[in-house]
Image 1 (cartoon, rainbow, N blue to C red):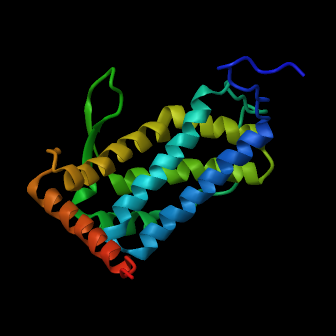
Image 2 (cartoon, rainbow, N blue to C red; image 1 turned 90 degrees about the horizontal axis):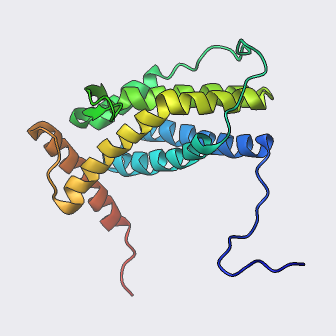
Length: 211
């Protein structure tokens, strides 16, 4: 067996489509479960940190799709996987939890810098809808269709939305942790501080007593 040269990365077999799809599906399932749990829990103090974590993990999975070969569906028309899930209740729950921090601004395309105003609750729900469509293709056994859809929607829609949502959530956390200036009005700043203060109180209450 020929030893690996010093400093050279070990060789790795490329993932099969089935293995890649299974990995992405696992991330998608975790994200959807977590997003529904955050909405149902109705705990503003925990929502920002948890949403920041889940969006970060989903973007990590999505970045793999961005560097993979272009996937091609087997047919010109998508197979019918049934109606989209009704996520309107979840969207409204997220909007209520986020309150004044729900509305934010971002640049969708940095090479065409038009500022867009949106709502985190709408964008998180849109991301969930895109991801769920691919998951239903995967569940029906249409691996290439699932990969094509996840990849297409990543580069055209949910990848950008997730990046914008990540920046918004990080701005709230940064304002609290580093006392940096962020583009929030007084009501949004107050709402962010209330949310993150309750996180600190929850953490303090759960810290084991010193022995």
